[in-house]
Length: 171
Image 1: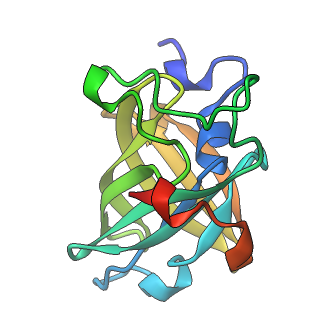
Image 2: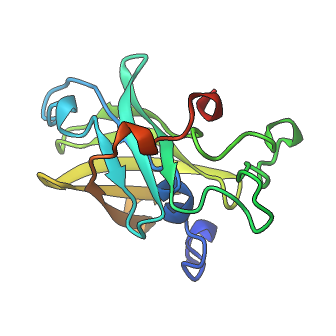
């Protein structure tokens, strides 16, 4: 089986885009799951390119990009979701973009059953999260079979409010 498209040569991996806004906040209580407060915070993506904030949403966990190391393109314009399959969504700013959704507690103590969106490819994949220590979160993107997916480790990161994406970019 070939690797998932969003993991090509790590030039612009999902973590660059997620790191550019990779902050996941998760809040779900459930049997065997770690308290949501343990992961409901901001996380620096594995490549250091973005911060994702994870937080509760509709009884599940979701995450949105709240900071990007490089928030603009070569021409100085804010990065947008230009690879989205829906032409109507291609002008959405990457900074503030929801990239994690629908995560529920699982029996292993993590969260699963959600989706992760890769703005670089404009594709969504199944997603699972699990704490790997007090300051480490494993993020797995997969298609149907988790064991064949790609896993990244994000680091807990305290993002100063002044460095967050603007409120306008998050809408």
